[in-house]
Amino acid sequence: MIDIQRKDLLQEGAFIGGQFVAASSQKQFPVYNPYSSAQIASVADCGATEAKSAIDLAYTAFQTWKSYTGTERGRILRKWYDLQRAHEKDLAKILTMEQGKPFREALGEIRYGASFVEWFAEEARRTYGDVIPGHQRDKRIIVLKQPVGVVAAITPWNFPSAMITRKVAPALAAGCTVVIKPSELTPLSALALGVLATEAGLPPGVLNILPTNNAPEIGNVMTSSKLVKKLSFTGSTAVGKLLLKQAADSVKKVSMELGGNAPFIVFNDADLEKAVAGAVASKYTNAGQTCVCSNRLFVQEGIYEAFIEKFTSAVREQTLGDGMTKGVVIGPMIEEKAVASVEALVSDALEKGARITCGGQRQGVPQSLLYEPTVLADASTDMAVFRKEIFGPVAPVFKFDTEEEVIAMANDTEYGLASYFYGKDHSRIWRVAEALEYGMVGINSPSVSTTVAPFGGVKESGMGREGSKYGIEEYLVIKQLMWAVQ
Ligand code: ADP
Image (cartoon, rainbow, N blue to C red; front, side, top):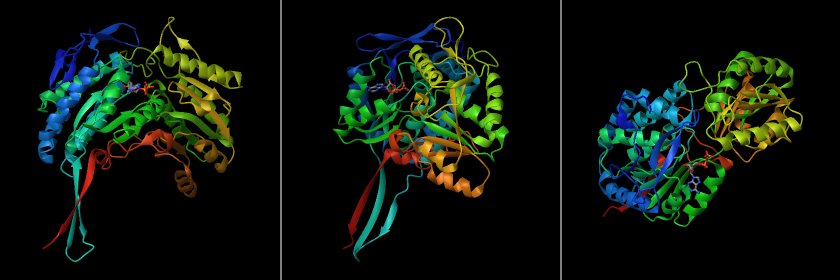
């Protein structure tokens, strides 16, 4: 059904112990194309039995995998990277079919996702410890970094491939083994990575992938297992909080990459063209369904009307449609409830006085998941869009007067993931960058995501960092050796 060269990349079984297998219950669940609503696959519906067996196998595999040298692990990861790049078009097609994002964006995600594997293949050799001068004459102190153990990972549907490699690559590089539960909406991209991992020479049990339509059941097994030493989650703040509570009982190491409410601030002295292009890029990528998408645009009074005019005409040029059609830059939203949530946010804003300058409607046949890229001018802080993560192609634009006022508005949220601002004054750039309570700040840049920079949030947006030289630390524990020389 999906037109790909390597037909075997399309798997419907769970990937456990190096094999693709049916669920012991024989249950399956459907995967749909969000553009056409057609069913594209029927995937093994794993439960507690599969989760326990995958964790056991990962624990057994850990005993050997941790003894590989960093160079040996790095070579396998490098091969996995090469295979992902060699089959990038097939992987991108699978991604577009199950997730909806335009093919070019899907290809970008596959390359971005693969870049973590390339990076951590290199970092595998660099998990350096320390030698600390002794505190007493006979003492020598050595710090080792060791893999934490079996890792459980839970990932979302908005980046079905890259959110997996961003966790799995550093975990494997560190010497950990992994059990991963992809989103029920997008399990196919995950399973395709499993095929290529085997081909790259990853030993059985080192990586296990459990598709399921019953996330809480697997989440419970993962968080209650004493064999699992680390939980890495990307998803909503609500589910993250629940998993944190569950993981507390066995005091697991955790990384949480949760929701955001990104401010995008444009000061009077900003380069208007660049700010407009940046706002379009940061708002409408993946139909607005990323945790770093700008959620609230704050534009200073002096350029407010000019910004609205240019931004609106740029947004009107964004073509909405089937991600497999050339020229389409915004695909469907992921599911009906996502569209309904955006519709509710837009009507709340309109009731409270917002002005639509473009979009504002669902497009196409009834039940279509295509929502027009929308601009809401004259937004105010009493609207739900000020507090809630929109997760859709809707840009509320707020007017502000002073720097102090906009910093207060930007920080008035429980979230703290990405933030962005545009302006030229150097003193203000430092002040604003330091004042924003966010884990990432884009300065005249609409993007903060790259393999080589640490990705992550503060406040209720989470803890831990992914990518960069810091990313591997999430999968390592420190051990000190206190040696008395005799
Ligand atoms: P989103 O709003 O992005 O779908 P979710 O937090 O609902 O975010 O989903 C992110 C991931 O968390 C998905 O893989 C989903 O299946 C999983 N998930 C949702 N609820 C639970 C739960 N109770 N326990 C474990 N995983 C869960």
